[in-house]
Length: 437
Image 1 (tube, rainbow, N blue to C red):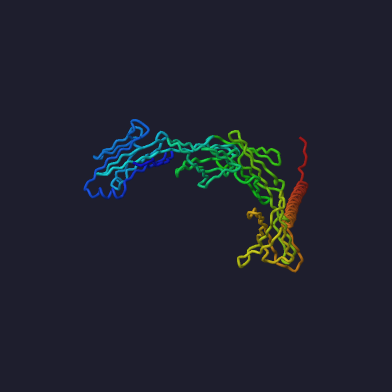
Image 2: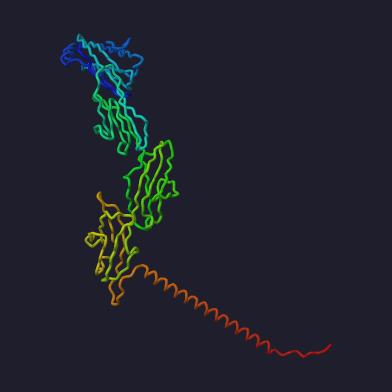
């Protein structure tokens, strides 16, 4: 008989194997007999009646009611000298000390195993709001008096005590949850792991969240939830520079962004009495002149990229239109200065903004280059084109009005001529002599 019991740890609801096996030499010796018989009896050492599972030489097996359909000794492994007890859907009451008496042919084997169970629990239950507190407890049930070592993991990575996380005994406490705490937490005892999924409800993204967009564009300012609870409908409140906005939707929509829209926006919602807030800094990118440019070849052109609502920490980079070789001219800085505009400068110029972590935003600005002519036209914008169109429309209207007036004048002359002719005709008719009755 073994001097001490082997210790096995299982997770509640899971599957565990209580080991018991004969030495290989014993099994090979019994295989020399043609048909070795086997007898297996697993019982609880700390409970009466303690029978858990019994296998008779005839092949008939018996399982106690508490372990019915959960306990078994695979007969396919018996001829290999393995008589381990398999327990499925592990329950807390399964914790305790087990003994096995095995007979295989003429050989006998006695095994002793102590089973303890673990279960990780969370309070309060998920989902929980960001900045609230949570406690994880690794509940251990065992008849063994030794104090087990507990390891903690988050998404499979070991967790150590810190200013944010405290550990004491079988508990782990987080006083102020962060979005990074979302995920699978585990407690590990003797190689067995029990898990819970911690769902943290919060507003995603950095705080404040910078958003860059081009003037005139449409935009949705996001107020994204990391995990949207199904049991309740959240209401959102928006404000800009501490002024309330009458919009209770999750996204704040701009159909046409202008410079005045730049500023700091605040999104706020409440979950389980915990207020969740995020600041969003809207920065509007604008190119001067703001309208697409039509300019003459050889003229002087400047494009200036600037940001409304910015602290000036961004880096600017201009990219010119695609050239014949597929490359683009790159100019560092906020301004493009073209002393002599060339035909290859015609197309989309892109102003890109960069920060510490890469690109922040970009805007395209179109330049149209007119081939050089003998007359000195210089460069002009769409405002000039619009002015020419308005002048053309005005002249067209005047022509139409003059035509209508001339036609009406002709009609009046024709009517006057007809009336004059009618009057002359009436005067020339002979008058009948007057006779008295």
